[in-house]
Image (cartoon, rainbow, N blue to C red; front, side):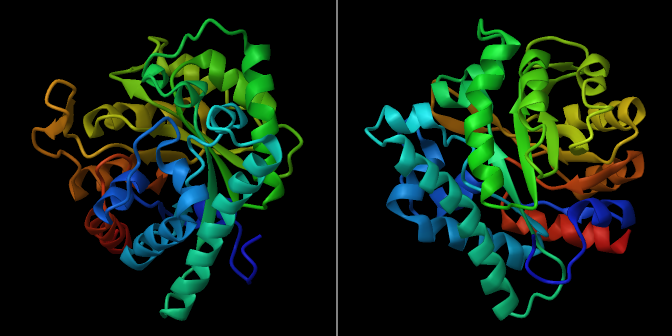
Length: 308
């Protein structure tokens, strides 16, 4: 799927650690793009797809091996609320993968020779609601209802031929079970990544229980956490490796806290190379950052993993 002689992502994980990119939204905002509204970064798929390519390229040039597409908040339902029909919505989702592929091509033209991959992002049901419920979960829907929500867009993303589907920021085990059912038979591997607080999912389930759901899923090449505090990732990496025996994916936030009243990030960042070394030693093989983690930090991650 990479279009060259690069190994598959699963093969690369068996050989060593792979560097993920950082937060897409903070990179887009730093470039001056407006992400307001329920579509968040997915609005640029329609308005400024070139901006997504440029953001992905910045991370490839910084040392990332994997670009996560701008489709986190891209759903048929979310686009419909803004007057975009299903055919156009499907085309925009596919465009997210093409934008990352174009960034790969440009990185090659800039002299990057290491293997590069594209991960098609599929955010949780709560991301479509755009009300913060992806950090609570428990939407009042059954596993079957959640599967029916996720399957059509996963089919579209898989048809665009990414290297992997990133089932990310999953807040509870019901949604994880639905996603694991929804990716069956698509012909594209996936990773499953929870958002967590302490040693539990955001919905309060023990991580041992949450990670165990993916232990025997043939489509899953990595299990782990994202969009959480770096300190919460420490224990989660160990639990995921122990429970599943799979490579672990970890890409937490910077560690800063969002102050809703002031509408600003506050406090110090706690994402550091020391943590990267620890995560790798515990079994992490896909390592990067999420919200507020930018290209400079990804460069530090890449250097740390190369030294290791």
